[in-house]
Image (cartoon, rainbow, N blue to C red):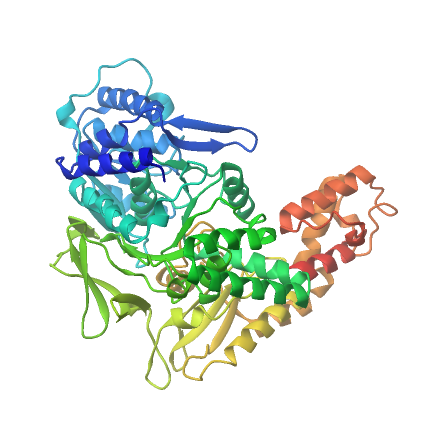
Amino acid sequence: MNKEIKAYLRTNREQLESSEKDLKAIFRIMFRAGDRILCETNDGFRVKTYTYGQIYQRVCRTAAALYARVGATHKYIALEMDNSPDWIAAFWAILMSGNKPYLVNMRYPESLTAGILKTLETEYIFCAESTKLPGQVITMAELTGDFPPPPEDVFENELAFSSSATSMNEVICFYSGFQIAEQILNFKQIVKECPRIAKHYKGQLKQLAFLPFYHVFGLFAVYFWFTFFGRTLVFLRDYSAETILKTCRRHHVTHIFAVPMLWHTIEKQVRAEAAKQGAKKETKLRRALAFSTRLQNLFPNFGAAVAKKLLRQVTDKLFGSSVMFCINGGSYLRDSAMELLNGIGYCMHNGYGMSEIGITSVELRKRPRDRNRNSIGHPFTSVHYRLDEAGILQVKGTSLCTKKLINGQEAVLDDWFDTGDRMECVEGYYFIHGRRSDTVIGENGENINPDSVEKLFMPEGVQQFSVLGLAGEDGQELSLVAQIPAYTTLALAGRIKDYLYSVNNTLPSAMAVKKFYFTFEELAPPTAVKVSRAQLQKKIETGAVKLMSIAQFQQEAEASSAQSPLLTQVCKIIAEVLGVEEAQITATSHIFYDLGGTSIQYFSILSALAEHFSIHEYSSTDTYCYTPKEICEYIESKL
């Protein structure tokens, strides 16, 4: 980090410390250097950049048009948008026009959000194009024209957003500019303890805007922390793994803050690739990780740089070599994933926060041996931690939310906020042992934390899974629910079952999973921070998620094996490409000889199959298959 950047960071911090510490001051300081790059996007072909000055002008124009349309109501306007330059402009325009933004959680059920908007007496919905929510729609495209700016004294100083809805209650948390300023000013301690978080790559610091800004982690740790200090956000076109990796490499992203779902996906990809190349490759990877970890323990910064070069065959297929700092938050990260990501030089740290308290700690130690213990660090300067008699973390400080509504009723916010998270403090560093509400009482009367069991499983072939307590004949039973693809075959189901049972057999009987279930229904949206056990239990109770035992699935699959879901889908794709009736395709129909396909159509079929099943190894003639049956056998081997 050069002198100019250090001076800029120091000036912004000092200006905030001496200001009113409200949202108007944060806005003024954040946008004071108009020539800096605020964000980058790409459409798959071209990279587009937006400066702080350009977004500032858009904020002012939008605020003027919004003020002309609705006035300074000083009430809440719902902001329903995904991360984008428009989100930033809309957020500040709402405040500048004398209104307050409620950040709509776009993963909430519509009925839940509708109830929240009613509680807030929200009349307007500021959205990208259209909405299903009740209210008058406002879009960026509508707010055009030349209008005088709003009076400066109407600039609002409050925002609201909701928790991640794990309880399915209407929970709204309110923050003023002061609490947000206190969150931002924690950065002084963070940089002092861990200078690497401010490390640039070729003079640039770019944060991947993976986490939604309507979530506490994305809003405070990604948006406010980095844009306040003039850094750059990189927006994603979509949230597929391929897009995420390509975007990081193309834009030279330096910082990635994400949830376990992303990190576990990356770990699976790396280990599956090594396994595919044989035992020697796996051994080589394991030794390289061990060596790079030892080197980083001795020389943290130098070792991380060497690790990315030493493991370049791995990093080139992942985020590239520009990544300097990563944070995991939202849920538990498996030890194996933490060790892998630190081993390849991506410097993974655990963070902690909640909707009610903001971001309150990050494990900031420099050496992998400390970070790999999976601590969440110690509290920032704006907060204090303590554990009650049951080991539940309690937090107080100047950066916690000012008010909280639960189902329309104001909750009492005591001096100390009870997080509901069981923790242990070792030499000043805190370790999570699960949530109080998730505890399952085992058959021997002991309390079992599902997180401690769930982290031991890493099943291949399932889309999502969760370990939780479900009602059984003898009370609550520790159960594992796995979401499987609709085309899951007997062979794939057998491999999943063998894996689950083999891991379970290694656990003490008190901790072992008692029931295993498959389902085709979605456990959580693909971009969800985590699978909510409370929401999943409710879906199971209402029949929105239908469970079947593994034995039941196998029996039904055997009964219909003549036309498995996988074969049906393959035949459907072939029929669509060739323009023939699906009924005339059998398992042994040859694409060329029986169905009259051409070589161009054949490669179109392979492309469609690769996209549908996320299999991209058809480049070798050794993998070519010419009948639906052969294609199914190949796909089964890759799932």
